[in-house]
Amino acid sequence: MIRDPESVQRRDFLAAASIGIAATAGCASITGTDNGSDGESGSGDGSEEVERIELEDDAPEAAGAQTLRVPVAESIAGQTLSAVAATYPRERFVVDSASHDAITVGVDQDGDETLDEEFGSDAISGANNNAYSFTVTMDTAYELREGDVVILDYPTISNPQEAGEYDATVVLNDQQETTVSVAIE
Image (cartoon, rainbow, N blue to C red; front, side, top):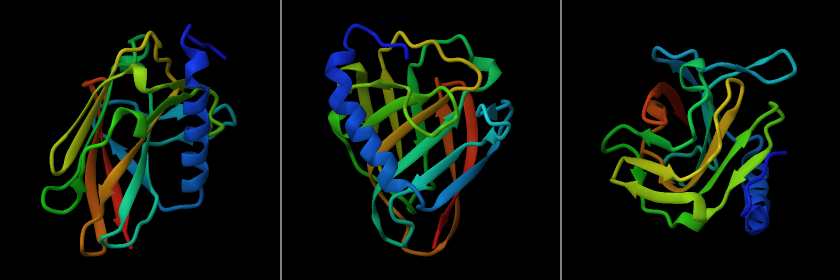
């Protein structure tokens, strides 16, 4: 496992990230379609990872965490991880502000759906939101590799009032953009 000098401070973050991932295991899973990037990556077991958003609660009007899983495309491999963003349909989802320490960011390097590299709140340089989107910017030295899956857990998103499928846009490093279908049941 690759760790930076601040990894000791990040142990608590890994524990929280593991709890967040475990809490969303088996929850609604949303898959995406790619807009011009190859977005899929090998997970080490022969299967391909696709973009998805996992909801803590997929009921209408439910509020809670949503976890983005974004495979790194060849087009941004080699870049430093610097930003993850999501835009939801206006007047449908509500994205509230979140403190840096409430956001979980990491990378699954081997396709086992656990964080192999994690970044604490000290690596988050910005967490900006409006009523329907958020952008988390980071100061990391982590070099993205094709096959990595960036995982971000954003804790304060409210679902629409009506059940249905909604398209969200997920962007990695301001370059790799993907449309993901979010099912509210």
